[in-house]
Each structure stands twice: as structure tokens, then as C-alpha cells.
Length: 211
Image 1 (cartoon, rainbow, N blue to C red):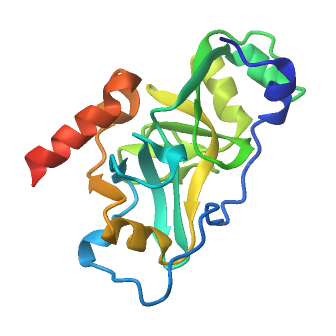
Image 2 (image 1 turned 90 degrees about the vertical axis):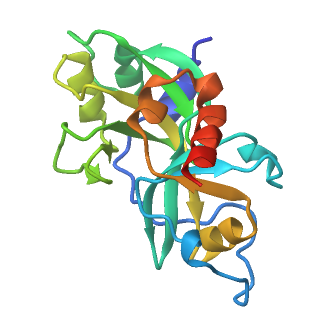
Image 3 (image 1 turned 120 degrees about the vertical axis):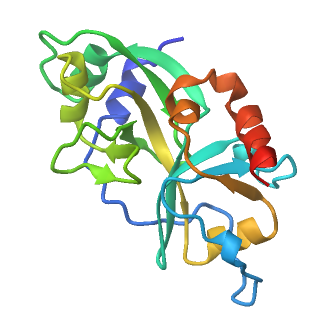
């Protein structure tokens, strides 16, 4: 399956202003119980419980990129949409794609602002606009990062996602407290290497071993 040209144009890589918009469900009441374990740091993986109430996150695994007093922001890493050539992605932004090689797997990163693109990648690659996460993974929201990949100058490992998942202040903590999400430390193999169809099962099994 390939993404249509209209959809590609809509998915042009913008340098996103990462204001932490909440997802559609309303924020929890201020007296919702919070626990220390409900405060995962950036770099952790959020594993949707089998009983999560939101069908958009059925068996989802989210790489948490930012989490602070203002909310949280992450990318779903196991919702592949299509394989597309890097040249076509760049052409859709109006860029010249001469000399660009290779293709990249496109993921649905979440329900918020699906017109924005985010490159999740290994931490050895960095541009001025790169967001460092935990020393193992990073995120760059710039079409120049895609160009670097197409010219064999990019990161060793990467995935490209459209949209993101966001929570307002206290919202993620409350969802973890009611066991909508479980957490484990980030694992590059789960983020980049493992079969996407098995990521949720492997992440959940690893949580069981870590308990």
C-alpha cells in the first residue's frame, strides 16, 4: 500500500511547535489518584492495557518523548501505514528530490495533528532542531533529516510517524493510575527492530519479567 499524493502533501515535514495538546478524551478530575509509578520519564514505553477504553490505542505501544508539569507527548511505534520512497515524501513538500535514494516505513504516530511528520531515530544523529530523549533515541521534525537519510548521511536506525499522542497536565498520570497504560524502560530493539506485529506482546512480556 502506498500513500496517495494528496495525503503526502498533507504530511509534509514541518518543524512542529510541540505544544502539548491533550488527546480528545477530557482531562481527569483534579482529585484523581496519582502514584509515583505514574510518572514515567521521557524514553519510557507506554504499553496500552488490553482493557484500555479508547479503541484508537488498542494494543498500542507509545515511545514517550516528553513528560513534565505541562503534560506529555509521545509517538505510537507499532502502527505502520505504508512503505514510501523518501524522494516522494520530499517531492510532496515541494523539494527537489534529485539524488535521493531509498524508502522509509510510515507510521501513524497518534491522533493529534496527523499532518505533522516526526522522525524517531537513534541518538548518534543530531541536527540543531533534534530533541534528545534519553541518550538512546531522539526525534527530529525536519525534512532535512529525511534528506540526510536519502543521501546516506542520516541516523543508523529510524522510523517516520505522522501525528502524535498528547496528554494535558495530570492526564497521563491518571490514566496510568487506573491501569490504562503500563510502562517499561525504552528498548531500541522494540522501537526500531522487532516485527511491528509483535511489539505489544514483547513489551508486555518484558514488563512481566521486570515486575
